[in-house]
Length: 225
Image (cartoon, rainbow, N blue to C red; front, side, top):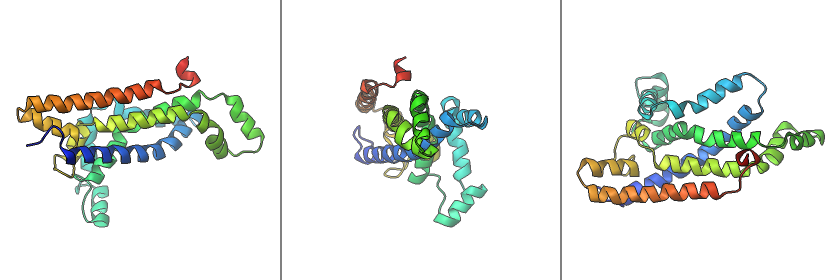
């Protein structure tokens, strides 16, 4: 039976959330730059694609990722040939799914922070000879650092609470793909409501602490307005 404080599920969840947050920040920063400062009309399409996981049912997203990473598709077979196995029902597959599912929670706060930066600072940096990349890294990003923190907190907390994508893509393999949300589902399914309540309370306290950290941070000008 799964216990309320299943140590393997806890460690796997923390590992997944940490790696997902790191990967998301690496991916979200260039995407946010293109959306916030891009000149092409394609940035609207990019923004819509990034926001898609917000409105798409997690099971639908998990299903298509499962198909894409499985052995029945070209990408899945290529990964199987390169790695010796498919990414479906593996921790790496969970990581890919978590990055895709939590992408808008990382990109959108950074975009909002970058758009709140006074353009005069950016123009001053360009006037002094800085390249667009230097202006982004040395001017815009430091001024939007609170939004980057918000993105990290949201990405981490959202990954901890994932269920649909995790279940569809990783299944329920102890020590490999069973996260705290899956462990909670097991407890309820087995009729262990007292233990389920304890684990749910733990997740509730974590989510509350994450939101307190998020809202207690310094705000950007756009958020204050």
